[in-house]
Amino acid sequence: MTDILVYSEKHDIARELAFKGKEFAAALGLSLSAAVLGAGAGDKAAELGALGADRVFVSDDPALEGLQTDVVAEALAQIAREAGASYVLLGSTRRGKELAPRLAQKLGAGCVTDANAVSLVDGALLASRYAFGGATLAQEAVDTPTKVFAVMPKAFEVGTPTAGAGSVVTPALSLAPSAVKVVDRRPKEGQSVDLSAAERIVGIGRGIGKREDVSMGEELARALGAELGATKGLADFQWVSEDRIIGLSGAKTSPELYLAVGISGQIQHTVGISSAKLIAAVNKDKDAPIFQLADYGIVGDIYQVVPALLEKLKAL
Ligand SMILES: Cc1cc2nc3c(=O)[nH]c(=O)nc-3n(C[C@H](O)[C@H](O)[C@H](O)COP(=O)(O)OP(=O)(O)OC[C@H]3O[C@@H](n4cnc5c(N)ncnc54)[C@H](O)[C@@H]3O)c2cc1C
Image (cartoon, rainbow, N blue to C red; front, side):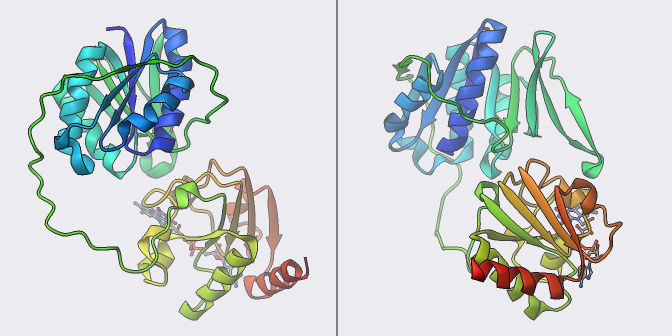
């Protein structure tokens, strides 16, 4: 088996995997393949080729409509066999986390999901991920001939495309329609937010004393052009929606700026901000653990500091 195969239903993540996959493939003496599936797949093939894929497997087979995970797993299994893949790198998105074990079962492969990094050690790829509730990082090796890793978004940066075009392959897939029948689609109530893609985030915690004071965090987020994130505590109170949770049970983020407002900095929260470029924190307790992680800290009451910050921001 001589190939690394990369796939994500999210094109941005597929780009990250293709760019880093090229580096791994070169170091391991393997080739790199990418798969693009579903309607409009052909349009994305060239970019993945330019980012490093030697071959881009493209299919818009009608059974792939809606990219149901059972059909995508079967399609990728057939492509992985054709490519001779020893590694399959997927995006650890909500769908990717379901896809990885389904695909691994079909390939008789070992599987790791939620990898926050993949590294090359002694001629093999190892995955690292949080263990013991986020208190430590475990490095995990897989020893089956084929290995499936689902990697979290933004684990790898995308550099300038330097590779050639890559050849487009149209695999002859044999796919049955999905066992899942979609009977209805309804938009989610309330605004949904994708914190994993946010450039700036204001995170609020239980230092916010009353539900109506969530608006103070929202105002600060607006003034900074940031998204609002929160600790699980505030979502448990139902003061913010669950998609605002950052951490072990929520989003893993990597913003340019994370401003923690009234957040203690428990590990289950901070695993979700460890890739932030710059962390600033406001907390009235000078010994709060968040200050060990923060690049800048203000020891003070958020009810005094946030209005003062807003005033300064408005004056800019
Ligand atoms: C299995 C498991 C999974 C979990 N997953 C997550 C997760 O994904 N995300 C998450 O966030 N949590 C998660 N938690 C919960 C986590 O352990 C913490 O309880 C939570 O992150 C703490 O939230 P907090 O910082 O808002 O509250 P607290 O820990 O209560 O801290 C509040 C902070 O606000 C400060 N403060 C209070 N008033 C003011 C004021 N007026 N001005 C300034 N500062 C003030 C206090 O000094 C304190 O530091 C999880 C827990 C478990 C067991």
